[in-house]
Length: 149
Image (tube, rainbow, N blue to C red; front, side, top):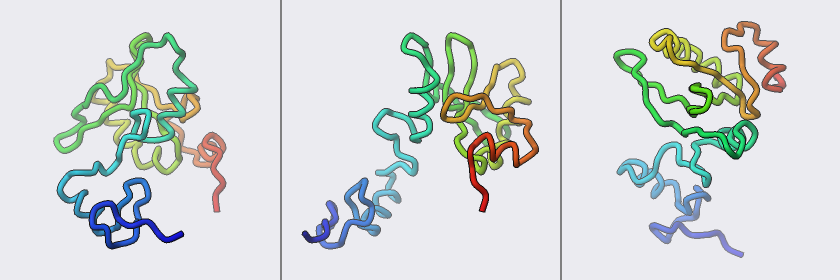
């Protein structure tokens, strides 16, 4: 069975399986704004971790919203928490890896400092609460179940 051809140009082999496009056509579509950098997955979330979080954390009768608001955290940046739990009045960020947590920790801190009256939690994809002041990377590795190389 031969390789699939690009759905756009019909001449190159498909390299981006999810879109059925070759690299050249995919790049063109992205450049003209036809493809989001982070497309929503089938259940409407931006990552599989968010989908797992919804299934594990929220119960059937819970009221919650996905990315309902964007907050200004400084002159150049905005921050969009992943979920808002209406019942508990809590903004929730889902952070599934140590790397993402470390790289976004500054943003979380700025959000909490700028909006001190808002309740904010960071949880992993299984719904476990993350102590976002953690400094000890070994503890974080155990929490996220990451094996260091």
